[in-house]
Length: 637
Image 1: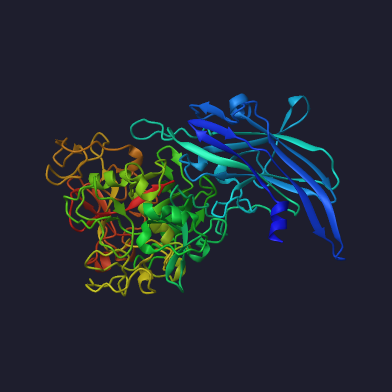
Image 2: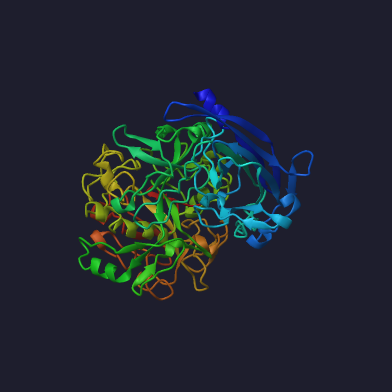
C-alpha cells in the first residue's frame, strides 16, 4: 500500500537563495498512475499526468542577483529577469482530480531574519498579464516569510522541517491539458534598515535559502496551521534565530521542545511563554528533534521569558497602592502589534519603545546572569568567559556596569555562535523600565498576583544560587538553599507563582540597571570618583570628568533621570511604568533613590534583604564592581 501511495505522490522543488546573492534552481517531474477502490469493492483505474516545469531561459537553471538591498513592495512586485522565477504546472486527469500545493521550506544555513523576507506569487494570463495570488490564510498577496502559515503536507525528507504554504489548487476530474504559469518573487523588505552601534547595516553579508516545492496528491490537502495565540490578547512571542520554544513537563520534571503551532503558553492562566538556546554541539540535534523531545538542562545555555506589549491603568495603580503592605492588582491590557494606548487613564508601558522602534514585546532573562566558567571576581576575562542564563548556578557578580553592558552586547555579536543567534538580535543589560514592565505584569491578573495573590518570594540563598526561594517572601538567609526553582516551594519566587515565570527578582543579588542620573548637560554620570565608578566615561560627583573608561552607548540603552527625587525625576514628572514613585514602598520593599555620588539604580535587594527585598525594591550605587551586585539580560528579536 505504501508503495502505491508513493507512486501517487511526488515532490517537485526548486531552490532560492536570498541575501546579497539570490539564486533559483528548477527541476521538472511527472507522475502517472492512480488506483482507487470504490465502496462496492470494484477496482477502478484512472490516469493522472502532472508536470512541474521551470521556465527559465538560463541553460544552467541558475539565476543570480548580486548585492540585494531592501526594496518597496511596488518595486519588488515589478522585478523581471533575474529577480523573477517562472514555472508552469501542467496536468491531465481522468477519473480522479489532482490537488497540489506550492510551499516554501527554509534551509538550515539561512542567516537572514524571516521577519524581513517578502514573498510574492502571481499567475500569468494572456498577453503576459499577471494576477497576484492572495494567500487564503493570511489574506495578503505580499507576505513576510515568518507570517506565512505552516504547511501540513508531508516533508520531503524525514528530518526536514515543515514548510510555509503559498497556494493550494485543484485540477478537476477529467480535465485535459491543464496549464497554469506562476511567477515567484522574493526580496528584502524595506523595513530592513537597522544599523548597529558602528553604523553598519545589520543585515549585510547574510543569506536566506528556501526551497519552493510543489506537492501533488489524489487526496484533498490538509489546510495549513496558523501560529498559536492564546486568548489573552498578548502578542505572539517573536523567536530569534537559535531560540527554541519550550514547555515544562511536570511529571517528567523536564523541559521539552514545544511547537509554535500548538498551545505552549497561556497568559490568562499565568503561564508565560518560555524559550531556550542550546549549546552549539547539540543545536542541530535539538532543531531536528520532534516536538515533545526532552531538552536536557545541561544542554541549555540561556533561558528567556516573553513580555508582551501592554498598557496599564494609571488609576488602578493608585488604588492598588492604597495599602502598601498588601497592594492590589495593577490593571493591564495587552496591545495588538505595535498599537498605542487606547484609554485616557491607560499608559503604554515605556519598555516597549526602544529608541525609535516600537516593540511587540521583548525577552527577559529567566534568571540572573551567570558566567559560563565560574568566576565572581572583578578580574573575570570577558573575552573568554561568556554569559549564561540558568538555574542552580552562582550569579555573575563583582562586575562594573560598563563591563556588564559589554558582556550583554557580545552575546548577540562576538559570542553569537554560542547561542545560535544570527547577529540581528539585540541583547543588552536590562533597563530599569524593562524591570518595571516585568514587575507590573507580575502584579497583575496575568502574574503572581493573579495566581495566588501573594508577593514574589525572596531568593535567600547565601551562595547567590539562581532560582532559589525562601519559605516566605521575607525569609532570612539560607545556607542550604533546598527550594530550587522547579520545586513547588521554589516556584513561589517566580513572577507567576509557577515555573513559567522569572526568578531572582527579589533577593539573590542586587542587580545593576541601565538607569542613571544625568549631569547638568543631560549626559549620564559615571560614578562617585576615579575608584568607584561605572567604567563609562562621564562626570563624577565633584563634576570632574572621568575619561579612563569607555564611551556611553546609544541613549536607547538607558533610562535617564534628571533629578534625585524619585517622584519628579523623568523630565520633572513621574517616571511612569518604572516601578519607582508609582509603587514606592509596596510590600515594604526598600526604596532609596539615586544621587550624584551614587548615580546608578539597582533593583531587587539581595539574599539577606528580609522584608526590604522585593520586586519593587530599589537603591543606588556608584557603578563599581561589588560582590553582592549582579545583572540581568534582555533580548529584542
